[in-house]
Length: 382
Ligand SMILES: NC(=O)c1ccc[n+]([C@@H]2O[C@H](COP(=O)([O-])OP(=O)(O)OC[C@H]3O[C@@H](n4cnc5c(N)ncnc54)[C@H](O)[C@@H]3O)[C@@H](O)[C@H]2O)c1
Image 1 (cartoon, rainbow, N blue to C red):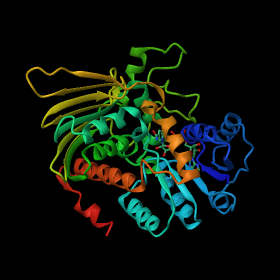
Image 2: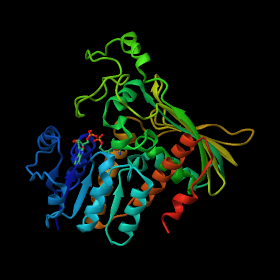
Image 3: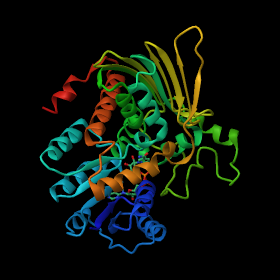
Image 4: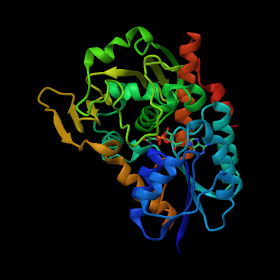
């Protein structure tokens, strides 16, 4: 039996997932494309080598009987309406992160989905990465005993930060906050690692670097090898323009934030993000009752040591590099399995929901200067 797939949002991530997915099986066929940007459609058709029908309105795509699954990779602010419409049309969904941009959107998606028997996979690519799967396996096996507390971070290369500040993500109306849009992966991974969800959070953050006063850093750093300007080199071939000057653009997101989190099972954590670094990291440092684990997906190195007098650090190379810690390829294979054989879902709608709720609570804590309990968010699920 072949599976018909429709794609809503055909930019960089839509194309990347579709490319890998279509290679998984000839039984998975792309049967519709929808994107307001002609160049995205054109690149997709060329790179995927398919001549699928193009729909101006995603509702027309959803009305097609030969489409059973939709891949949604539009801007975050459209996920809610497109996912809800997909449920109404009886389509299974793979939706890019984050689930939605408000708590109300996310809880409504959850309730609506619960009324259906439809499958829903969220694009938490890092859940599929061998690096994070290894960490999770070690934690579940008790390799460091009970987790007591941990640190985690996501700090970005300066050009990646510049890209975010010059792209559609710079505006909360399009993408939600930076924490939601970019760090929802990390908040999800943390929930997964501690096998719990946050009880209360506090946070401080702001926009301190990407301001007009700092525009001089573009000239200070100079040009990249391809002659593009510093802070404006990120993946520009694959990504739709305009790519604005990140220092003078009209962004309303932060470029640095810290948060503390207490989970329902008593584990405590601190999180740090910064969008302008020379040494980017995506690191976890986890302290357990019997040992310590330190790992960074960007270096692909995982270190683990048992507490004791004559124990040694075990170093495990999990492999680093392209494709979200090699998660992209695994995601495509497991998504294909989900489509063709009803295989298990590694990142579910609930995972998307709890990660988004965590981001909303942390941002609320930052905005109000208060410690925020997540109770009111969880009440929305009753
Ligand atoms: N899983 C991951 O690791 C990961 C990485 C990057 C981006 N993403 C997510 O993927 C999604 C797309 O991001 P991207 O990096 O591909 O951005 P992009 O700018 O490359 O592509 C977005 C595309 O969505 C299209 N679009 C905008 N409004 C639309 C609408 N109403 N209907 C249909 N299409 C619409 C745009 O024209 C563009 O072609 C976002 O939700 C983003 O958060 C996920």
